[in-house]
Image 1 (cartoon, rainbow, N blue to C red):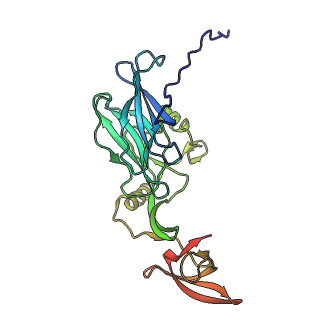
Image 2 (image 1 turned 30 degrees about the vertical axis):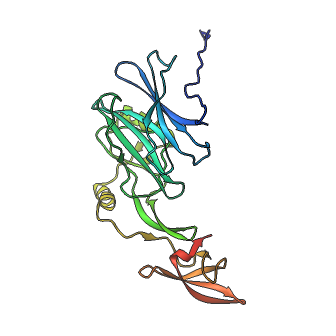
Length: 287
C-alpha cells in the first residue's frame, strides 16, 4: 500500500541578499544532541565564478523544518575563496570539517580539514591534506573514514608551461584510481561501492584483488620518501607551439630533451626547411 504525503515542507535555507549574490554547495551532519548543522558556500562581491566566498553555517533544532540565524563557519583565508564543505563524524566522536582553499583559479587549490572536539563549538587550525602546492579538486560532502586504514592518491611533481610561465603541478600516477587500506566486509564494501564517482573495485572475478606487500612498499616509498625533482613532461616527437621569443606562434616537433639544462631542440619549418632551434621549457606549450 502506498501512502501519499499530505504536506510537503519547503524552505530556502540559504537565501541570497545584498552583498550575497549567490550560495552554492553544502553539507549537513547530525550533532550529538540531535540538532542538525548545515554548512554552505556563501559568495560575496559580484558573484562571478572566481568571486570571493566563505563558508557559513546554520543550526536546526527541529529536524530541518526551521533554521537558526546564519553564522560564519570558515572565513575566507584564501586569495580567491573557500568552498566545498564536508562533515564527518570520526570514530573518536570528534567532528571533522573539510573544505577547499583556492588561491589561484589555475595553479593553487588545496583541501584542508579542521577538527572539533566539542561538536562544532570550536574548531582547530586548518591542516592541509596535500603537503605540496598544486591544483586539487574535492566536491562537497565527500569525506569518508575507513576502518583503521589510509586512502592514498599517489602523485608526482611535473613541470608544465601555462601562459608562458613554468609552473609545478602534482600529476596523478594512476589517473582514475584510488588506493585504500581497509578491512573488507559487507559494510566497507557497501560504503565504497555507494560512494559517488566510484565505478567499482579492481577485481578478479567478483572479489577485489589486494596489492602485494612489495607493491605497497614501492608506492609508499614514492609517496612518503625523498622528494624527486619535478618530472619533465616533454617527449621526443611531441609537437609544441612556441609562445615567446623570435619564433613565437611557430609549431615544431621536439627532436631532443635536455632535462638538466631545461632546454628542447625543436625542428621548426623556416622557409620550407626543418631547422633545429634550441628553446627553453618555458618558451613552448603543448598543442
